[in-house]
Length: 265
Image 1 (tube, rainbow, N blue to C red):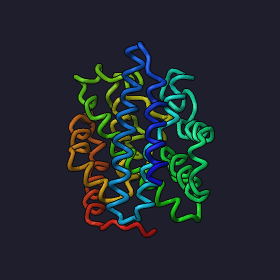
Image 2: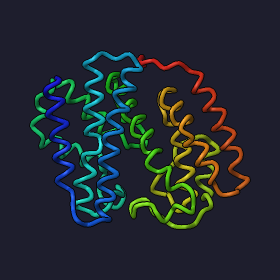
Image 3: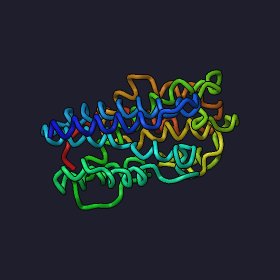
Image 4: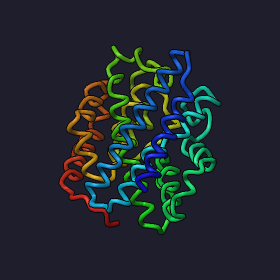
């Protein structure tokens, strides 16, 4: 497996470099995805080790992190956007890329299926129903690793004075207030429909609602310790109707952080 992992890392590095261009705006997005890939890979490995998984399963987590956003590069090449709603679901597109990669055929069939399931579900609102408990575990690991690093990616652009520095694919309307639908969802502690995003306030509240989709206290502890939750709250619009949602969120965080992690489902 070590040789295969090395070959996969080399292939991915070459693949990402193949999308380099002299267009500075495009390269800004490509660079962000390159760095994101590296961090998610590292986080997935750390989380798998924290959960006490075998060396083999830690390597599978590494492969999932490495390839989780492989579809992003073809997506931008084809559609000139990272917005799935305006183009194609990037996880589904990534599975098409992996189907063309002979290195994947060197995995045992059950490992190949596990990797594909986790990648295909890393960006969905919910993990697809399955009775395969290992598949659910690895999908949860990848989703946590991805979200933890997305918080890092977005953090520099939370403050209004830095919003104009955000890459084009992050920038949206300047309207700050949270829409009524998202206020209601936030108060209820549910996930939101990203397709209904209308304002910067909506985008911020959705990032707080991601907390409810974090699977492991290990991940949430890092999100809290790095100040991502407090940063978003600091720059929320002054809407009193957000208070019930904030109180519910803080109570949930305290409870989740007090819950020990386990790989058992």
